[in-house]
Length: 143
Image 1 (cartoon, helix red, strand yellow):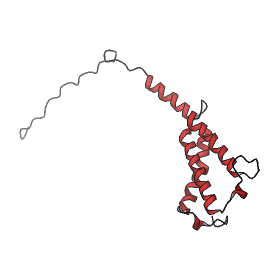
Image 2: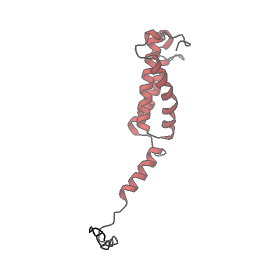
Image 3: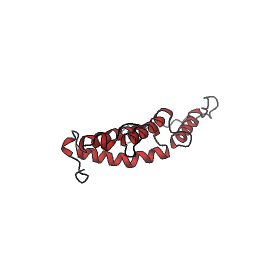
Image 4: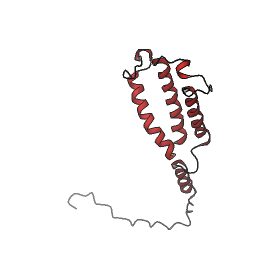
């Protein structure tokens, strides 16, 4: 953060934790979203990541309306517009789910097949043979 000329003192949260969790979130969550693994949860995590990223950019970067632009103002440097687009696209996945070509859907189909597998009734199952009685050992001394 210091290399990006941010004023870390303005961030009330622990800066090292933000960098650590932000880096992990930025690399792992998009991969999960693309393959459709935990799609809703991953999209929600990315929305939270965008919120934290925006908080850090605004609080530590001394950004204003001139550098960020206003929402839907049509300027190319409108960072608010880009982040709003990301959030709305991710909200679609949170609300509707990852879709039919996803690992979540594959896992759902496999779990449904497993639950619908017919259970054999007790009469249909082969009888379990009774164990043959074994003689009890003698407790008498010397036997």
